[in-house]
Amino acid sequence: MAGRTLEMVKVDEARPMSAVEICGTDRLWDGEMECFRAGNTTILLLRINGQFHAYQGHCPHQGATLAEGELEGGLLTCGAHRWQFDATNGRGVNPKSAHLKCFPVHVVERKVLIEVELDGVDVEPELQACGDGYPERSGR
Image (cartoon, helix red, strand yellow):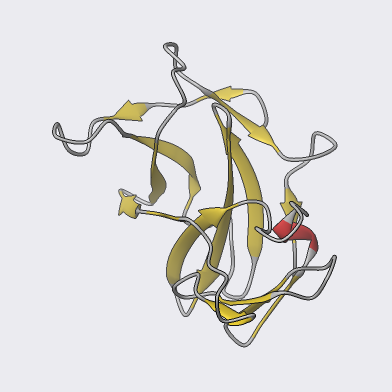
């Protein structure tokens, strides 16, 4: 999956975003998460009760990679300093004042698409794994 050219799909003409194909629906099982990069944006993709959720890939506290944390019972916990978020909406649990940036998710023909600004990237982005060249994941 790393280095694969992504298909761009216009979701809404009024918004300066594009839907980027991140992966197939069978890539994640329930209770799993994986980190992806589209353009200059790091995205954490989670699957909870059959639903996909996408958030910023780094903790707002000190920028730790959230995919290195834990996902259990709908609770996302940052591995660095134990900040916690509701995995279904990105709202802070501990501390309550924290929140994660959410990205709209669409499932079309068994493909997971994320609406994301590509930070001025004019060419089609490449899907890149976060970190060491391999997608970061939990579970299985």
